[in-house]
Amino acid sequence: MLFNFFTSKSSADPKLFFHTDVHCHIMPGVDHGAEDVDESLELIAALRKWGIEQIILTSHVTETTFENNPETLAAGFETLSNSIRDTENPVRLAYSAEYRIDPLFMDQLAKGQIIPMPDNYLLVENSYIQEPLGLDRLLFDLKVKGFKVIMAHPERFPYYQESPKRFEELHTAGNLFQVNLLSLAGYFGKTAKKTAEWLAKNGMVDFLGTDVHHIRHVEAIDNYLRSSDYRKHIPLLEKTVKNDIFNF
Image 1 (tube, helix red, strand yellow):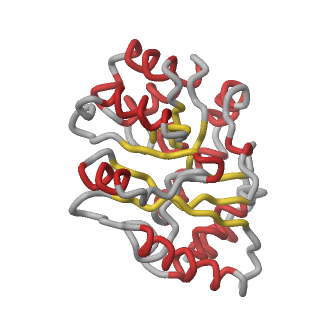
Image 2: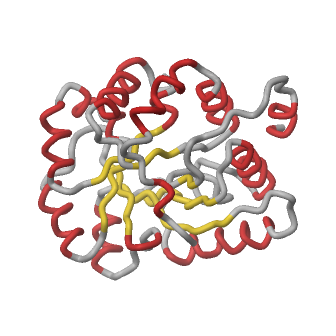
């Protein structure tokens, strides 16, 4: 149980320097994150110990694997919201999604079925295989429609990791970058960590997300928050991270 993991720590709980998580998979039963409400509540309790007071739930919307829609996401959110009222972990919840740029996304966009974050921010995810064709035009069109585009964990895509110029092009065009704490922790390997640190040093980390799916992610982040790496990263990240602009 996560509860046992956290209460067994002898030192004080480590704290994040922000209070809003903008990327996680805590909604129960809709993707490969939390399987049920009990696991959702345990993950929320872990985030609360790090100082998180607001959570934007961003379940996957991905063709063939997690074909969520406004109805499935609303049902999951209602279930979790009703359950958390009975706990000792008060936290404010909102929901959107992590939208993979694929035909399902384009179909939902055309039908007006996109659920943005508060203030019309929108978290989109590239394919891991290659950059989507026509990406620049799509991101421009999304901004024309009034969305404030956040690109999910760009540090994890191999085709970007050796292309600092591409990062600069995308960021200069007004696309915001959300980096994973797990990347900075080294959970996804040395290259993702190095790339995340490069983005931090160059002022291109606009949002941080836990991207928590399960206990292994919690353990990795908890260890990172207790590390010298985190203390080294904080001064760089504090200059640009905007997580707490949300108020809901």
